[in-house]
Image (cartoon, rainbow, N blue to C red; front, side, top):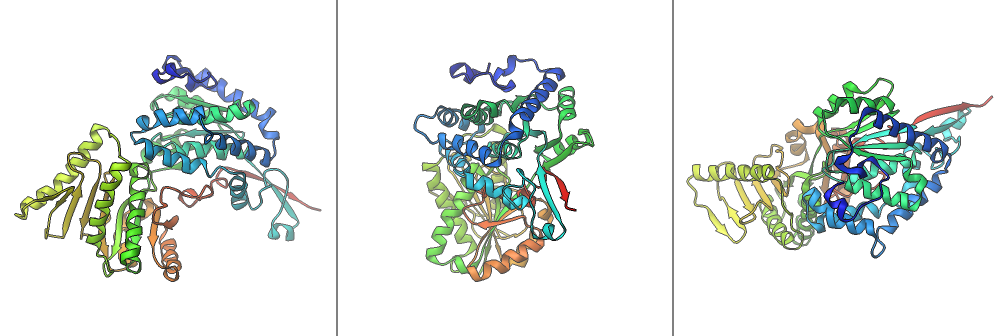
Length: 478
């Protein structure tokens, strides 16, 4: 049993509850798959959509009740496991749980499948009716998930989506990352034990081919989140009959137009930008790597960077980043050193002012602000508008552009990787900008400040969450 489980053990409902003392075998994995599938066929497959939505929504509500044990433990142990502060963790987790309402759950089905009852009964849209057809959507009998483990919300959302599809589920979690999904699964089981019997969670390391093969062989559908290399490796080994849906490496950026860089608007924008940078410590695919700023506004791009640095310094006092692995801290220090070398090469004096280290009038126009005596946050202003990958952990680039076409040109090398673009623009220009971004290929466009808080029904990587997983049965009338 894990050390933290010895202090406050969870019931042994799932394989992951048994800790590292459990020796998993291919036979164990297959038996677990067969068990949850059988339980699903006996109970979950017979429920109506509204019944499942009400169980999930009630379970989520219970997390906010005073003294809720699942929430208490998640807030106590989750931040250290993920390497984020308590406030950062709590804000991100609460944002997701608040969206688990009956209205949102049924709305996701209506959005993706055309009718909130599509999983209950044969129904039809206008076009289908004209053709004398109705249709029923059905989810996989057994849905598997390979979770990334760096953030908990994607794993929790996968569980919810699978339950709405009436699928038995098996989550294969990265080693040491199952606690938050387990707490969520246990909270569902506390509300309705039969629901918990349709779920399984386990941990095993990458490269355990016999376990992976046993897992893959029983699934009707598999979702996986991780690096592109990992997804390609999994794709090659999944049986052809098993549907595979992969979510790979993605990046995001923000674009601020000059219209909203007035004194009043800029203050709000800076706060919202800091929220996007600090949310989940910038570790998710929805976090910005670069902020592009139109260069003819009342506040210059360099001014935006300076104000953002001051706001991140303030946030560090109330919402600290927390510790990071040695390798991540070294990467940030190394990247910072690049700008110090450029400053020395230019023969500039390094001026330290409070939390700011300013490298003025460098070739190419570079300035850097950084937290003193730590790697907690870094803001780099760079006049070179080419897209750059951030070190993450609150390390952000600010770059000037003349217009949107410049953004699209300089971000072209990562077009196929883009997940989210946050845009700050006045209403009459926003539609035009969004149209251009959509044609360019951006899957999601949102306001600044909401990058890491997508709506529950958002289309991940531009794909329908349910539509990728269901199959259809058409009924043709005489």
